[in-house]
Structure formats: C-alpha cells, structure tokens
Length: 84
Image 1 (cartoon, rainbow, N blue to C red):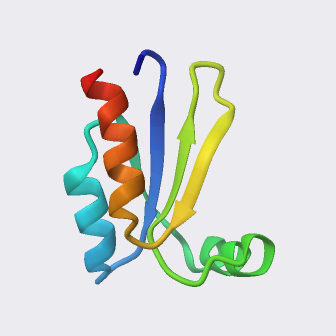
Image 2: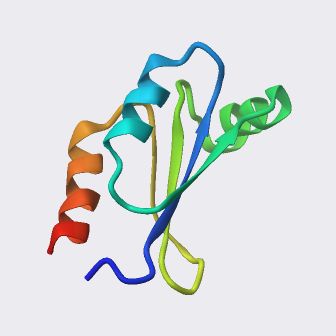
Image 3: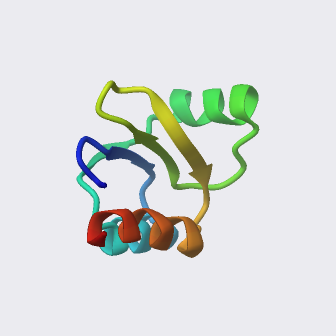
C-alpha cells in the first residue's frame, strides 16, 4: 500500500512541532529547512499560519495530501499505510 509514497517536511529553527512530525513519520520523507521567502510564500499562497508544512507525494510525484502544523491524526493515517 505504501509503495511510492513519500513526503516533504518543511521546517524552521526552534519549531518543536516540526521535530515531533519528523520523529513520528514512518514514510520516507525529505527534511527541508524553509527559507523566510518560502515561509512568506506559504502564508500568502497557501494560507499556512504555522509550521511544519507537509506534502505527501505518490509514485508519480503528484501531491496527494498536504497540511500545516502538527497533525497527529494525519501522521497516524499515513503511517498506517506503511504498516498495511
């Protein structure tokens, strides 16, 4: 079930929710330190108000899910796909 799924986790310094997200993820992910410019882009274009910002990709690199902040239920949902 998990074949081909991976994530990108955008984080910033001093963000405990970012660390929690990365520590709990079981799916493969890329950790990306967000620049101030990218954080501004997220605020303006995606209405993101807190970090981390997470994108989940399928095997064809299409975004199939995304969220911001620490979302334990979302992390658990995707981890279950790995355990299936």
